[in-house]
Length: 359
Image 1 (cartoon, rainbow, N blue to C red):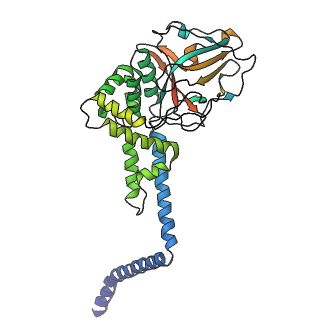
Image 2 (image 1 turned 180 degrees about the vertical axis):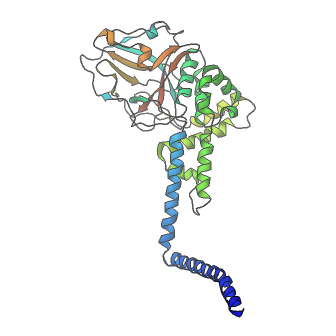
Image 3 (image 1 turned 90 degrees about the vertical axis):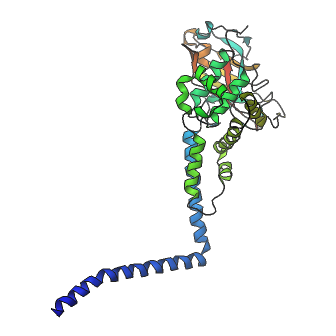
């Protein structure tokens, strides 16, 4: 009987011994880690640095996937420094709604265009800045591009369209935008409302907070965004846009005035004029050059065009701008953007002027 009791007692004590041993090991590990951190402070700093680097990558990934408009001046159409053939000798190109879709014959042309900025920053471009062309990028690129084109053709004021485009870039969801901009979006680009159904800026905040809650000494979100290049700058601009758009102003006109006031602090003036490269729109057939005259919100800017070769291969004016006539809203475009080759100037979306009012 005693032997059975002793065996049972020994058997019951084994789990307790294992628990005590585990507790002792854990205490030893914690003490060792504490002494190691005290003796080797660089180890703790390396761990924190790795976590901060991971946070930057996480925030950067959200920006890359969610920014309404992404600016990438390295993503350009092919260019050539000079045109093939004779010197450029343009003539003004007049157009109507009907002729926009008709193939253009060979020749050199100039067409005046309206330009819209895509950066809510403190600079505006001046005459003489050289520009290169590339595709418009970003999660809401169709919404922004078609808002600007359709609104221009529908007679909406450039400033109202600029404000609406900036509101989309702010990341605010459709239901939080000023009523004036909601009405423009419903009227001009209702099929693209899904592109502004989510708040990218809130996603950036949530991602940052998820990392910051586990890391002491994490830099502020603003500081982190400042180190993430153009994408980070766009997010910081979005913060300023959001403050203006959600202000306690009594009406949307005052909100828009506040929005524009925040973007007009300082003007970039180029020191000397520079001629930009020719964009190869269609190899051996079509070439474009984007020239800024008055810049943002002005319709005296110029797109220069050369068409060569077989007339049967030529594109229409709308083809050159990656657009097509569509119903019921007049036009649909995929979007094109011009990037300045100098410092400090705005990236500008070119838009053909209203064909109903072109002389």
